[in-house]
Length: 242
Image 1 (cartoon, one colour):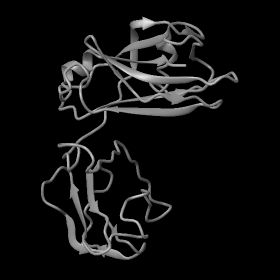
Image 2: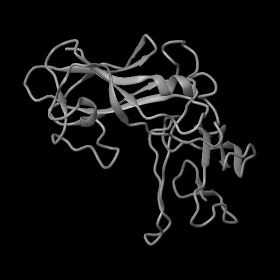
Image 3: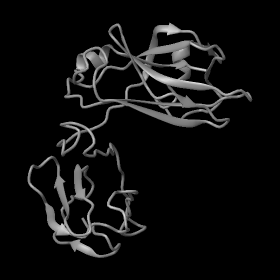
């Protein structure tokens, strides 16, 4: 494991191999970007003590004290690596989403049925079957889809349950959409928790498919942290705005 500082290629710390071969390893990295008071800390597999750390470092690679990119680079072309469950936190939010979370993973929950509203027109079959592409492959573009040109129309879907009863730090929606006419079109995601609706950011559609993502750190029904029970009961979907 190598940790680099401001000047790319300057190795701050190396040593004994920290990561086992042919095994999943959970890595957390925290850094303060600053030319003189920069810090970094690396933790492995949820440990509360650092494998690597330093203070008073130059962790800035430009004239700006912020992170503008992230790259995972292999040591050699012949090395095979897999990466999963990558997330980023910063200090703009409240606890616990501004510090180390410990060993954490992301669960993807696919639609399994119709929710309270199925107003968009399906290309074939049921609405929910046209938006579960990733549960067996990649987004299939225009092969299966739901379409609408009516402002206010809503599709919502029930989802798979979580595996177990984990602590839930946040819920995110990810969806793909495009428009097929000259008029401006806007869509936004929505969550239905109990009788309460949580709305995502209104997105202006382009003529090519694009992916959109919204983050819901609190349960709209309670404005408090999510519970696994609430996640299992929610509906996710989208609404035509304009």
